[in-house]
Length: 277
Ligand SMILES: Nc1ncnc2c1ncn2[C@@H]1O[C@H](COP(=O)(O)OP(=O)(O)OP(=O)(O)O)[C@@H](O)[C@H]1O
Ligand SMILES: [Mg+2]
Image 1 (cartoon, rainbow, N blue to C red):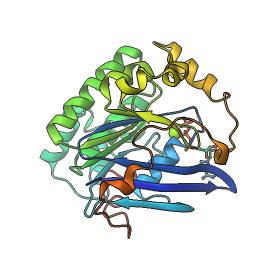
Image 2 (image 1 turned 90 degrees about the horizontal axis):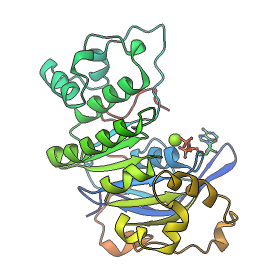
Image 3 (image 1 turned 135 degrees about the vertical axis):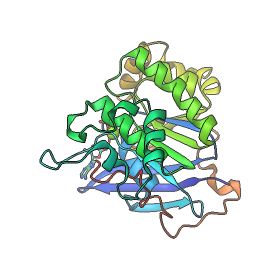
């Protein structure tokens, strides 16, 4: 049974079409990475998945009782608001001191427990948000550009840690990343998004496809190729003629026993990013 499935989802924001015809499903325990240019709708997609945003068209289905931990791309903390790391971990759900300490340790920031949130660097703040997301004991962990601001070595180390997190917690992980060359080794499935799903599949499967090579190339060329790809086709979605991976639109065929009624804790867990963008 899928944890989350999107069926032909469309979203308009401020009168603009941001996502169109997006169908995808996240299975238990898999690591899925969404890549795409700036403004391609990646964060919007994550907000749909956690239930912070309602689709204008289509449906978002979540497994009953699904627990989600969400690490947003950015966190806005009021500079005038005194908020310690320890207290932040207890919002909105109180966690024990031991649980908080364990989660911070696991996220590699055990030494920051007594600091103020406003004093943290961007990378440290994201680690603290990861710790908070882990206290939700998520079945699905969502990380929106967790390696932003990390150098290539830092990114590679982070992706190794992602694999450890999956093994320890048995959770599925949905990632947004620009680090295409690093992501490939650490992910089960890649989804290339540009207002719609341009292509998707297992890295090895996709990597051997000519379309993929044209999109991503190799090494750091990959990111450049992706941005070039943005201009390769018009955005007449109806006439969109890219080859889609086998997962696309497959939700219907999977015998989903999902509940379309609501977020089921996705919007209420401690990892869902109060004040997050
Ligand atoms: N609240 C909003 N009102 C109007 N437009 C919005 C809103 N939120 C996002 N958008 C627009 O939707 C598009 C997709 O935004 P989104 O944040 O999902 O992109 P992204 O792929 O995450 O980009 P980035 O790589 O820069 O994080 C952008 O054009 C953005 O300007
Ligand atoms: Mg984003």
